[in-house]
Length: 261
Image (cartoon, rainbow, N blue to C red):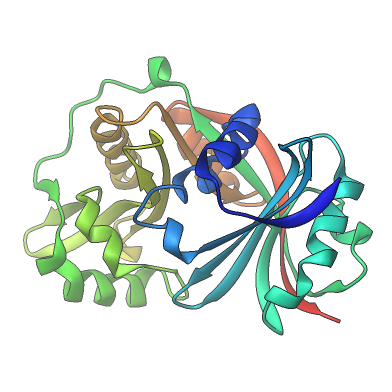
């Protein structure tokens, strides 16, 4: 057994495919659009990956994603042994309980239990798309930034993702009433993770967000096989909305701000 940085996409993919819903973000990060921002650390035995951690370098810092396959103590060793490659503070999405097994990496702040939800395409409602709903592009960047600042402050929005064409907006006249987009999209690995979903504060509760999610999922299913999302476990309103769109819980994890001790 050796703990090392790994680079071969095919080997990484084989490990991640063992639990596709849980590893949706990591599978998306194998896409050429995201892969240059990734570092992968693994425990390898006889050429096979036994446990795997991803360190993703985003515009707002780094995020560690580590979900144990079968051996959380081995995954903890992978993270501790790879700590030199991590910044002083970073975000982390970890298997429940994994943080307590780490030695060189410590939690600075706990950000709560989160759920992973996966779409059952057969359960996606067939309701019509609202009028004045359209695909958003780079020409809408300024409007989107203003919308998120007002209605979803602190939201992480990567403007590059507009190039995917997988953002939809609902309008009331000239006013952007709601947005649904993605955090991850890959036609190569055939996965997508919804994100940046928000509705104008003045127009909530009338189904705009639900309708946008349905519209976006229909579009995504032309090119991907698996659609998922992350949501805070305490956000029951959002969970009910996603349940109504055909999503169900496929896993859970904990989020932290962490640092190397």
